[in-house]
Image (cartoon, rainbow, N blue to C red; front, side, top):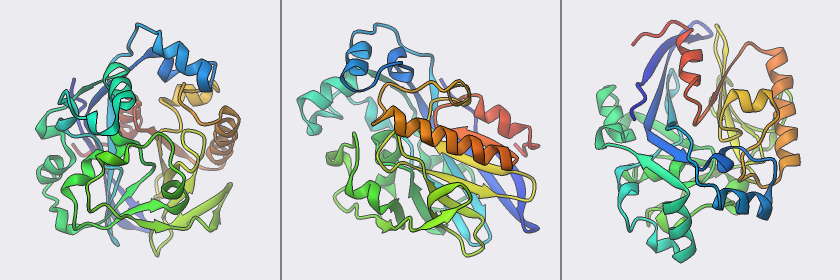
Length: 287
């Protein structure tokens, strides 16, 4: 299953900004993993015994060609995830879980590094890759970017949830940034650009210190939500994935995002929401 990339031309303070939304393959998860009224052990038991998988969902990466540089948000998946032994280094339990609860479909052409070539973006021109959190479907693609600056929330790095560090490249030592600012309704934030139009905001729930990305443009505000939820509908209906750290914390994040949306014209882009492409396409896609 292939999700076509989309590019839109926007402006930040009258400067052109090109936005690319690409999917590095597709993933299917247990239906009770995507949405569950329980959490913790009860949620885990329900999706372990669930025999049904969701439809294929995208594994989105967002690329911003900004006047201060090219920024990539998350690194997506790679074809190696299809190898039967890919998760063995992480131990028996992780190997069993990640090979039975998820399905992946990805070709070499869908990997981030290949899609950058298609967009005529050399990795040497990338100012930074920013990781919203440390789950493998968001970090696997970094293996091709050993000379690229990689940024992560310091608190996420120090207290990860559900990461598989044995899948990290040996050289992986990201730049850890402190979310010591406040932005609008978000208590913890970090301005990525000097122009303060790309802001990382802490949106916990999926992990303890999960981050999302705010891109302020003249036309609209893009909100790359990563794994706050699996879809905009899930946010609207106050429903939760089965793998949250704490649904009370996730609910607070939902409420904060909704407050932000009331004050801003927002395009909400979760990492695995196929309908996000349609919402972005309404902003006059270039190709």
